[in-house]
Picture 1 (cartoon, rainbow, N blue to C red):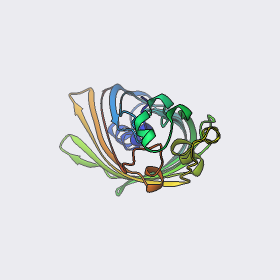
Picture 2 (picture 1 turned 90 degrees about the vertical axis):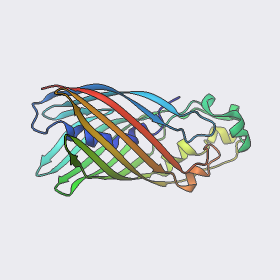
Picture 3 (picture 1 turned 180 degrees about the vertical axis):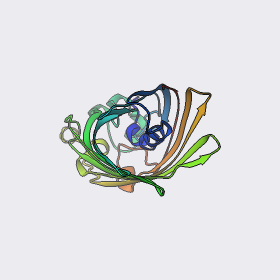
Picture 4 (picture 1 turned 120 degrees about the vertical axis):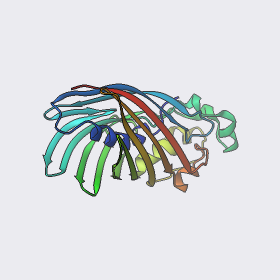
Length: 260
């Protein structure tokens, strides 16, 4: 089973990871570790996913890599940064992973469905950091030919320092374009030609909240954990491909070794 919405759920985690390692560190590999992520699937009858996560944090003079997102720093000045980014979109599902009985209840024969492929996105991310916290605005679009759609996201996080730990509550809202939402949550032309009833949700807005924790363990180890919640709109939960549950909770935990 593929990790659904993994990149979206890791957005607050990227804030935690970048803030946990000091900004004045020498360029190079900052930390390296491994994590686990669990997220229930929005698709009808599909199992939730427990997925290993590579926790890689590299910061060069211009290039960077954080978790599952890499890119190039275009502008860095006075609390403002603009990056060109590349990231995976892991919203795909194999047709065989749908629940046959659950789809039948929604009037769909699983054998008539196509796979939904994972994608690769390119985009821009602007970040404003100050005493009031951190605000990120991201625009990214599929360049792999999976959905040919795009996503616009806004995220605000405020770090709370408690003893040697940092808590990061954050708010997120994402706009999914019609091509993106239609591909992952609607029916495809090939399926409709086989007799599947047409359903196209169109563009959708997905709000969410998250709470992250970053805590050093000794001199070199860093614990990161996060719980997140997303509210799926009716046009997605009404899809015959989904379970119909509007609320989705995700959990992530990881341990990293911090370099000099």
